[in-house]
Length: 338
Image: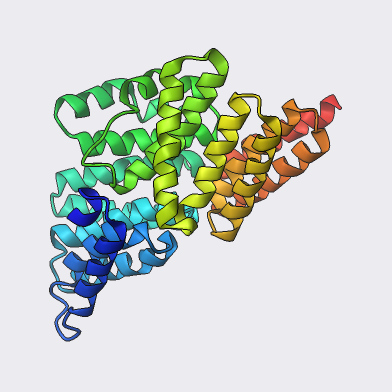
């Protein structure tokens, strides 16, 4: 783990993780949840497709559950699974049921921090999936809550809430709802640069930063965006599968911000293609919608409409019911105007 989180040696860390898995006693599962939580939850995912680690994390949880005592690493397997499933685009309705079960069992076992860590994912699924009537992420992630977590030195929980809020508000394109919290906490860092949630803090935070930079040319946002792109370049060199599409979309938004329209159009197309190829249906949706806005601005209405329809299909596949309803209403209004 330290090879990855401290030294940034993803290849060496992954090799050691695979060695630890090979040394597991197949006849004694006592250590399996511990090993799976660390290897699949924190190390191997930097090299292998993120979707491939999900069954192993779930298996670690099931083995701990079967033993009669889930324990901290069993609950960690469930928590790692929940975040990685959410941010890899797992179908939201099914995932929501799994997360609700994990939360109940962590509360039963009086795992306060673990229960708190499940909360942002649970609320994010409800918000995007449509099982809540709330239209504002501030209803479940308020700046005062972030301040409290930060003041209590619960930095990991603070970052989890931040990343889910970034994701939700980017999906719903409610950038104004992010501005204050993003400016205060976008540099939040729990434990080193290679914690899993940092991927999405840099990805969604980078998209937010480029949006604000296009609006007001504030150097603060450009600095955060260029750093996010730099981090994604580093990670994409380790795993094209997990990071290429995110890098392309950040680059597209960067070119758009500097009026490099031909380069932006190329990167949007590559981001969409890479998202589809690597099975990130939710990020394909976001890329299609961002590209649609870009092409509409460029006067390419037919292409923009085509991209918006593709975004709609991707959001439907993800199970983002509330977003689907919003897009359908918006498309209906657009048709009436025309």
